[in-house]
Image (tube, rainbow, N blue to C red; front, side):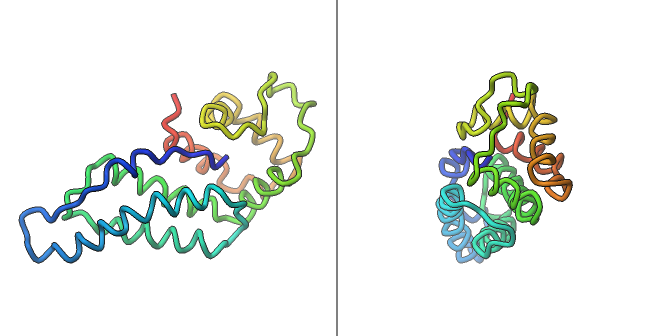
Amino acid sequence: MWSLSFALLISCISLTAQQDPTEIPKCETCNELAQKIPNAIQELHKIKLEPNDPRVAKMIKMCTDMQGCDSCGIPQQTKDTVETTCNLLDMVNKEGFTACASKLSKENPDVSGYECLEGLDFYDKSPASSCVRATTKKECVKKIMEDKCGKDALVDYDKIIDRVVKLLDCK
């Protein structure tokens, strides 16, 4: 579920103070954040997240700090991606959803009985498969999570999945 592409963040990062020389120190800090955020996100992607993981809280703080960089000429697309990422991390940090995603990832329970998957490899972590799970198979994934983890896993499910769709730019 965390197979996210952050090429936008990586490629859109060159900030300069617009017009006001007093903003240069702030923009230098923003430049540092802009370079750290993609790496931090990639690191989070590599680990199995647990609810209330302090690394997620640190990442959310970095994202929030980055949102204060408006006067540094950040492209709108980068701002939108950072905001979406922050919102997604904040929602995913909710205990039920994250615990269930972690459980499914660790245990790989048999989901072959779910005809609604229509042959989709539920455990394929590619962005394309993540998009399919978050769009056309959204209700099927919701059913699997409820069956395997209970109703607590579905708290804010639709909001989280909508953020995933936006972040992955699913068509």
